[in-house]
Image (cartoon, rainbow, N blue to C red; front, side, top):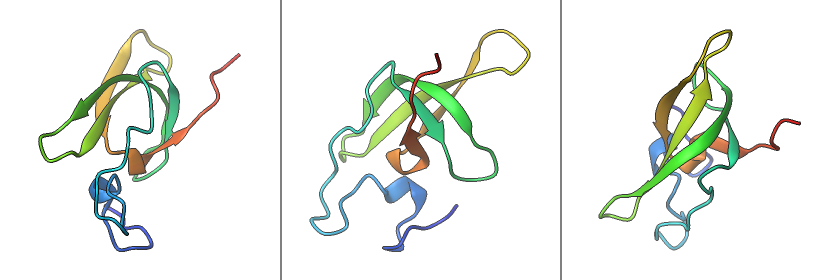
Length: 88
């Protein structure tokens, strides 16, 4: 797991490093995103949003199975995702 410029891990990036408060939700259900961190990357669609009691936000993202049918779902912190324009 990588760290950002403030030394936070990918799972902690949904906290503002200055105020140490949870950030607001960055992505909406149905929004296209790109998972850009780690060993694998790729596009997906936000299928759900969860907020833990401690305020951390996680996104359930559906990735299309290449050459197949359906999706597989992964849970990510906002730091793992970037906004992506929907395909035409």
